Length: 108
Image 1 (cartoon, rainbow, N blue to C red):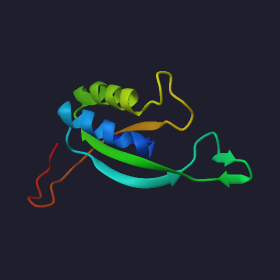
Image 2: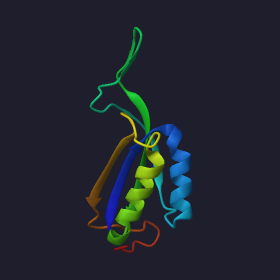
Image 3: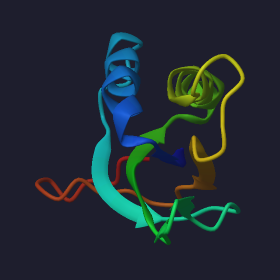
């Protein structure tokens, strides 16, 4: 099992979630986050924004589903056809254990 963390633009979230659901990946945790990437924020005239609002999507998927989920995230999160600075990042890490709180059962 793998944990996929996707940090994306807020305006792209609805399309991403719809595509994940329609593709058989309904389990997603979503949270508002603030941050900056390599561009170190954004400046508009005299105003400088050090932290930019983003959304973080968390998903645990089977190893064999990783490529499908990544493809959906890249295709639906990208701005335009080539993408742009600030479109986001995707992080993948192994899940060693997972328990269902109500039953206490190990889900792996």
